[in-house]
Length: 162
Length: 266
Image (tube, rainbow over all chains, first blue to last red; front, side, top):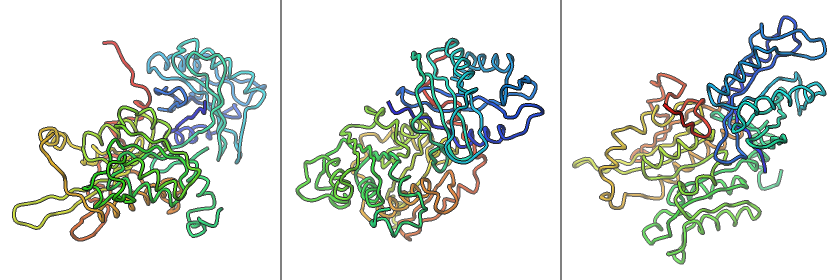
């Protein structure tokens, strides 16, 4: 299956604007895309973005950014309240293709697993943005293994592929 | 880049790979859609979902691009496929000889859909589908109106409706009154006037809008696009309603409603 993620440009711009802001002590920021399934499991659409408030970060010298229980509870609550999947998103400050660090691979799949425990009828996942490209995986409804996103498009009056 | 596309290299360094990556849908392969498909094939699109349930009739041949006398009785799809294959031998073509609504899942992976449809109802439905799946929708259409003793008035439109931006309802193109009039006249309309040249102008404008949306060659990718065509004067211009749009956000299709419909118990 060729997994496709579509992101409205307005939402991507909002996310990039938020993720590029410096934080008092975290080296990077994270946020969450809201996403929805479609009638084909191979297409997931992003429907919004939620920032993590400054006060919900915790100091952790072992990670670029570490979010606390309140941020995670907020994401879990959004699943229930808005019936939307949650995609953990952060930005790597460079051009060209990007991918997860060891820390990303260690921590984020567990977090996404807890999203799936909350509602396994929705897709959840991880997206990493660079200035020009993106990398991502999704845990699709009813699946136990992450699927790589093969095509990520940004849509407004124009269309871009990340 | 293949030599074939040298003269469109101004579209940008990576424009041709991007064009080839886009899956394009064309719904309706009559007067407007046949022009659109032909131009897409010339430009180099490689991935098509095309749809039309009708067969070619003699009365179509005044405007069906690529249509020949011996095509009478054959599906319009066959004409469109022949046009594409004549230019792009390796193109992927999903051909649907049915109403698009019955096979709408085939269009989910389209990046851009051209609607070359006759009714407001069909337009409304396909725009809803596109909004739900974050697909760029480009609508073309024309009509000829007779007002008392004046000469006939020919008019048409090209609209680009993009996720999040103003929709055809926001633009005042689809209205409850128009839908109601259409519903009241259902079955009584007879054949609507159609000729080849306005379809060509509108299809060319629509394809130009799509190529800009994909390549961004003009440096701007506006949303929405609303071009109006005055067939009597031959003028295509930005529709004056765009100036008076009250918002750039669409209240009818908010982004938060994208994806599978949610059933909420009351």
